[in-house]
Length: 321
Image (cartoon, rainbow, N blue to C red):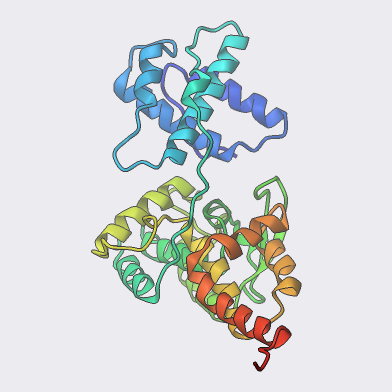
């Protein structure tokens, strides 16, 4: 399912390209999103252009104020792939030179502090009621809470069907996640209680809904919309000075993972035994994806280093002189 519609003069090429990708087995979720953004860009900046010209592309690849280089690389990648496809079908399109593409910089996530979370969820709970979309002030706060408390990817949360959420046991079926794999996630009891209360209230407005988190049309919100809303709500907190990178919606997933590992360390649990379970829970393609948090997240270091020193002292005791 593609939640986006394309309306520029490049509509047919975009839709044919996405159809080809899906026929080859690629879900192409991020591609659908960035091609949608590009489609809107073309309508706004080059409404009469019938082909992807060099002028369009060069304006598209300008680094925007405050934009991370990784975000730019995603924008370049998907439009370059579209242009290559158009060339292969005999359609004129300017292909972004490889010189414009650089290696993705591995992002060091922002791990939320308790104070930051309190301020953010205070802003979340201030989401206003709208008569045109009465479920909005119920749906959006629950999405953000589920993201932080379960570690789901934003796209996984917004695309939950009502039938994939067992409201009695807290079992969630995540379908066609990253790598086109399904998995089962079980949420904590207190989160389940929130989901149950939410489900009762939203069920009055959408009694036979297909999606667990419906928008005003009864279909899922897009991950892009939730990400944009996160930024607006974060700005409302008034927090300007943060350690490390500026927070993003995806950092809720990172924070869930890091804080879970920190808790295990404090409880003196065996990380080697538990990390494979966390990796499966998070839907990581390999254990190395989970190990990444051990090595690159500064918030995890103090407790880990302290435990390592204790272990080292026990293994190699001091010798009296």
